[in-house]
Length: 214
Image 1 (cartoon, rainbow, N blue to C red):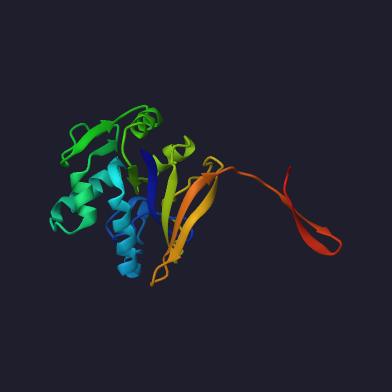
Image 2 (cartoon, rainbow, N blue to C red; image 1 turned 180 degrees about the vertical axis):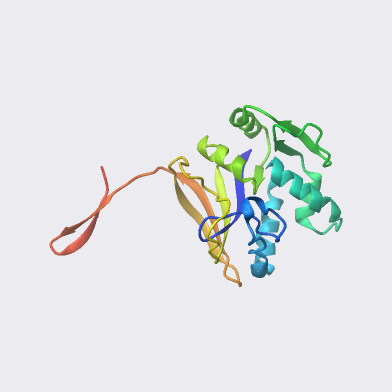
């Protein structure tokens, strides 16, 4: 399976508490719900499209517990997100959760996360999807396991909060394979890993010239 990461993120890289004031107040974060004013039909179409491609779900414990408290209550058979989250096999990464109660939870990964996730990727299927799960994403990013990032970038600056990429994250580069703007100004980006490189800008005969290492 392809491992895909799905994140709502601010312009300054914060992914904490997009859905509501009480979603994740950790660290004194009091700006939760910043995504909600930008939710529209385009947003729904994009997110529904994500879940239509999922065969299994992978979550960190905090995101798992937050979603477990909400999504089983959504019983509308036409809700594609609820149908996927409640019906697909789910894996949760945790050292403290021993008896997950959410229906169709396939298991708990308590150690050797990169190795366990690499093994999941070897299973047949389309996509193993991560949603939110900041600390898990840090681990998977540094291990080079994420095949595709799908980011909905919100036109807000939050100033502080839990960020998608931590200080000291593995150096990476990406190819933009799709982008679009929603009617409310969210920018949707689909990114795949690419070789990282550097270069220099020089002046030759009065003009700027880009120089890349050979």
